[in-house]
Length: 111
Image (cartoon, rainbow, N blue to C red; front, side, top):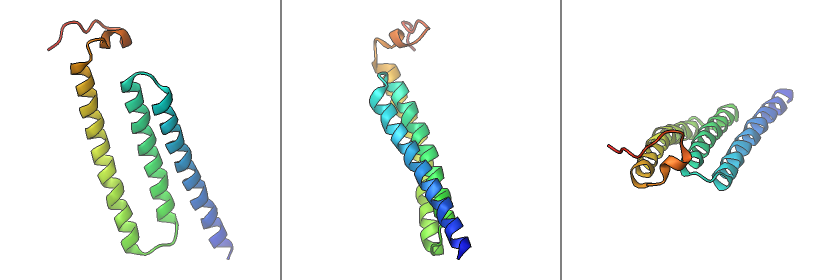
């Protein structure tokens, strides 16, 4: 009986931590002005939030098939999120003519 309450406490702790990470990511995307900073906030938030949610799912008692589905979903997100972020940053680099205003280097010479 006590072990179940301890497990419940850890699951709740990790789920609340996950919720805090997702909330901070959304706040960072909303508050930051430059698109590359927004992508950084979103990338860090979803990676750490998914990690905490996955740990909570491992601790919570569930069937093995449910746990495997969650692991596959998290792996898919961890592989696709950096690729999409990289693609969006490349699009911003090549299409934003005022990018030099946000950096300390002169980017007037493009490839």
